[in-house]
Image (cartoon, rainbow, N blue to C red; front, side, top):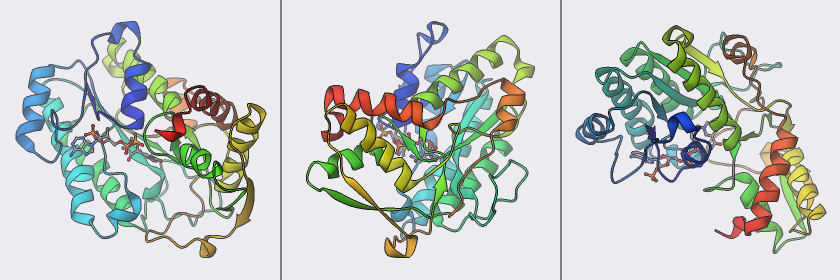
Length: 295
Ligand SMILES: NC(=O)c1ccc[n+]([C@@H]2O[C@H](COP(=O)([O-])OP(=O)(O)OC[C@H]3O[C@@H](n4cnc5c(N)ncnc54)[C@H](OP(=O)(O)O)[C@@H]3O)[C@@H](O)[C@H]2O)c1
């Protein structure tokens, strides 16, 4: 059972479901509302899942600054409700979290041993969600990912292509670095974890794992790569003007360093996500085939 209906990772999970998960059910609102305990209990009971993957979240980072209660209701309380319902159904839960639990002050990539110190409401709600999930279901694994893009939903790659249709030059922040990560790579990796957990329950060692693409980039470098691939395929492209964070103020502070060290994921599950440039190429090519940035 996947929690999250129309979301990027939820849709990618459905698309990437292996044959053993042919009966995967992905539930968003109105069938599953994580802010409603009765809805969560009924949905999990009806699905009787072997495993639950939580890809539902309040992801509007700036909006959360003025709606912290709303972000907490879904990302913290809702995640805990789902984890508890999964536990009652005898199912483990794979839960997604974020790089925004960190302040961004560290000079090197963050490991799971680093102390979280979120600077914004979204990060605080996701950190509380990690704790709620871990407290509600002993059979859990929490995967922190970052800078998610895909052919689905709203994301940076689609926005860049959309804006380049009408503009020759775009200003993009160059002093925030992270790991652009394809929702499809996340989905394939989560299914690999699910398969390992199904084969041997002990394989699902509870805890937090960082799960991002290999390689790192600034937002400006990510935009440049999107436009390089798009231009090569005859799609929209713009020049990127590299700017600093103060030149692009947003309601929520973003970490300057969002990079996550994924060594634990590799050591425990043998999973290494592809390099972000390779997956960006695939995603942009897919978007160009369907003119997907217009939807
Ligand atoms: N996007 C990023 O850059 C990013 C970065 C780091 C971590 N993450 C984490 O990765 C996970 C997936 O993110 P995403 O980008 O796929 O998110 P997304 O595209 O914004 O999708 C969010 C999902 O949440 C569901 N949802 C919203 N309110 C709900 C509610 N009350 N009850 C049940 N479901 C609800 C939506 O389904 P319906 O609309 O169908 O109800 C949708 O499927 C999240 O945990 C997020 O925090 C994302």
